[in-house]
Length: 437
Ligand code: HAM
Image (cartoon, rainbow, N blue to C red; front, top):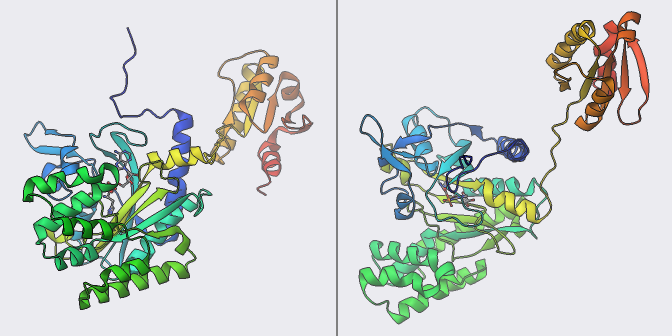
């Protein structure tokens, strides 16, 4: 009978795969914590309604959803944002602001399979609640950059594309469009890079042929690639609100510049993000060669906590996924090699020697050393080979002669030198060897 396979788009993690994943998570965790974020978690299974009409049509169509045995409509979480809004919304009154939270968790989306996209994937989510100004964006964009930079990637490898749904609303509003049409057009802008003019099809089906002037306006606004070009593009719109918004942009870009991160940021008005709840600045990290799907994405969503039943609370955040990121590390030769070798391999004679060794083995393990030994009695030659193959730094030798003399031998498996010490002095000798005092 053939072995069972994982479901399409799902992944098994063999130990070397999991070691690499854990390494990435460890660095993300350290980085988020260095930025003052604290970690939380939420259930994998949520009420389906949490995502209905909040995350947007695209995610809703990709939900793994079903009726549970109690006939509840439930869904595997496709993203963290609605869940974290519930947590924060419930305690909004008592949490100290700004609320800076992060999590590392697995998500599920029934997506078409492609490079760097699966049906289950991990994300680090980082969000700030309770800060309405661009100070929150500075913090989050800096964190997003650092989560990638911490692995040795530079501004030559990736950038964060920065855009603004607020300005898109101003701009399209100044062309006379109402909110429904603006939202439909932003949906088209989101797909324009991938689909070209076919992206406008949905809009035209709903509202009739796209006016040529309007289309030209949209195409020219989405081609804005610098702050100066943005100022020029809004010159005509001229409204005070748009001018005030440009001050937020100056604050944001100035903050990132002061952190030494300006070269990582690319103004790019073609980014609007597919998720429905974003209300302000939006940003996505991409590899510079533009060969991979987005590494990370986020933005401001000031209405979502309120929409989920909490009181109004400004919010901004992002998520970085593990799949595209691992691909990029691989392409740049930065995938870490992680040793899972033991520190110490014990070579053991017969039953009496095994008893003597076990006392030391357990003691060393409880001190945190990684210690291995053969489960069964085998010839010394085989044990020394196993010790060398294991990658351990030292072998401790518990033979009949050693036991009779009341000593243990320690062999440095690197330079093959050996020394002896009294049986009671094993831990001290090991400590000295590994140099931890
Ligand atoms: P998102 O853009 O849908 O945003 O996902 C963020 C990142 O998760 C993507 O850039 C990608 O790295 C990864 N990702 C998403 N879908 C998949 C997939 N099917 N396979 C592999 N990786 C994937 C959000 O999820 C927002 N909730 C982020 C956010 C947090 N906004 C505010 N706070």
